[in-house]
Length: 280
Image (cartoon, rainbow, N blue to C red; front, side, top):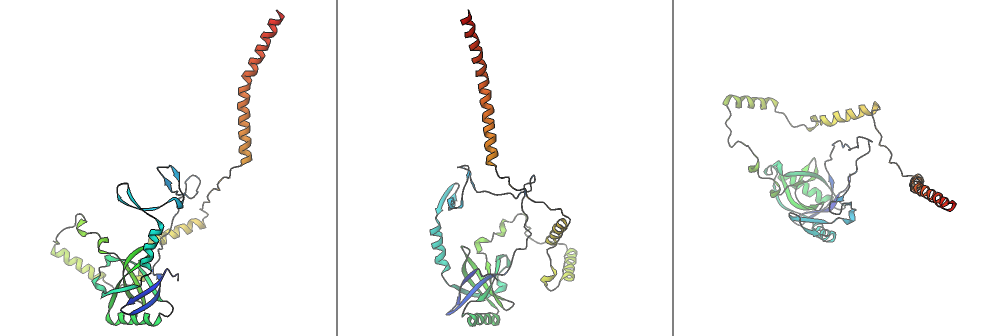
């Protein structure tokens, strides 16, 4: 399993060297955009609308737009120094809380933690302490250039980091339109709804749920592939410099001939007039 971060988790005077690994993966079927005419993958370019040209990555800088078309430019060195200051810090557990005190809306992404060299004993200590107390740890850590609020808990005998949103990242529910202020259902309707919930209640078994759209999409792709309903992008035509040069030369020659024909006729007519004058 790929290690995406190495660091130290600490609580009190206990330091745990750990490695972090992504606990989940995106299984979405990625579809490419092709040009309908030639079946070639579409290329997206970075273009400056002011200079009206494509630009390279080394021409791009990062900036914060604090007002319309007003920017504060931040260079890479400044950002790296700021990031390093935070990354080099140990991830310190600030508080221990109950898991059910955190609403699921705060949860973002999950990562597995494994002990790094020399960390197995302290890893086991934290795991046992969390297990016996039923608590989870609240900590801050730098992940991909962002300081994340996170919880540290146990999942199937493994320590897990769950990144969670800061309070100001969760939008105010008061901004949601058309939410009724009170519940005023009919008694009979409410009883029927409760009976339905009771009949459909079950223990959570994640294995029974499947992405039916992804399965159907992959079946369609396989069927089209096995039925030879596939397409190949046209190879980009390489300019033939010899042919282009010959075309250019021929076109130039044609133009030159057009320009010289009238001159030749005029010279011939002038010569005939001069010859007639001499004869007279």
